[in-house]
Each structure stands twice: as structure tokens, then as C-alpha cells.
Image (tube, rainbow, N blue to C red; front, side, top):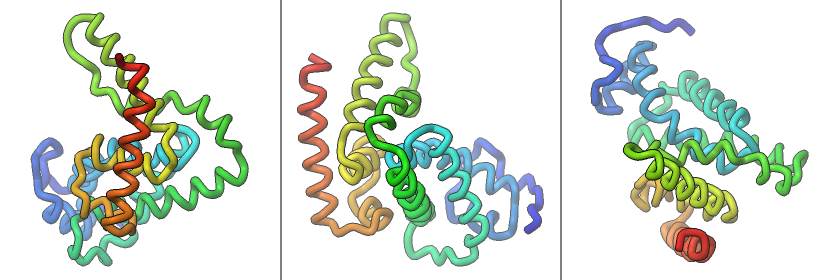
Length: 200
């Protein structure tokens, strides 16, 4: 598989995904780099819900990009590229997470998952006190999110952290709209309960 380098896609441009996918299918390295920069942070956050640590999440993301490169010709455009990408990621993450759960007890995973906090915080600007408070709030939210059951955690993350529409979540996760609503509602209720004492 050879990759060509082109200057058709500036790395900082807001190029539509459809154009980038065409470039990716033609093995345009710039198109690939734009897509990687655009979606890798989201992919890491979603993968983190399925696997035990940052290294495993990074492996899932890498495996996903490899699968995308191999199968980009199969992308038909019936859904958005983001939805197609996340579906691949979720399938790989579920497989990897299932293997890990058979070998590592969850109690040991939760204690080592503090790395996820950096993906939740945007790094507040301003005074040191504001940054410290923002980091504390982000840490509390990250810990509360991680304590949700896996499916609730994924749905809440995609809807409330990433801002996805309900239909996108349903398509990416392969769940019904009713199931998505129930998981979102239960996750939000549990999250509010967990955060009520911590953030007051």
C-alpha cells in the first residue's frame, strides 16, 4: 500500500470529510493527516471507555486507522464518515475490551484510569486558581463518567461530551433510538447523582 503526498489539503483547513475521504481513497497523505488530527482525540475518548489504559486506547485508535486505510474503498457514504469511523472503532474497542476484561479485574483498571482526565479538560485559560478549579471539576466529571456502566458511559460521552446527535449515536453503536434514550437518561441520572455531592 503506497501513500502519495499532495498539497491539496492544508493541514489546518476546514475541508469537508467527503473531500478528505476521496483523498484518502487516492492515498493522499495530507488528507489522511487532516482526518487523523480531526478525529483522533474523539477516538481516544471513546476507546478509553472500553479498554483499561491510555496505551490500550492508543492501540485501538491505531488499529482503527489501519482498518480505515485498508477498507476506505468500501465506504459508500450512506452515513457520515465520522459515523463509519466510530463504528469501526467501537467494534475494535469492544473486541479488545472483551479480551482485557477476561484477563484484568475491573477494580484494578479503575485505579489506573486517571490518564483519561486529560481528554476531558480543555485546559482552562486565566488565573492559576481557575485552571486548578477547572482541572478539579474535569477530574470529578471524568471519574464519574468512568464509573458509569460501559454502555451508559459511551452514550453519555458521545451525546454530552462530543455533542453527537441521537441518530449518529444509534448508527455508530448499532442500537435502537429507544435504547439510546434509555441509556442516555439512566447515565445522566446516575452522573447527576455522582456529581451532586462533589461539585456543590
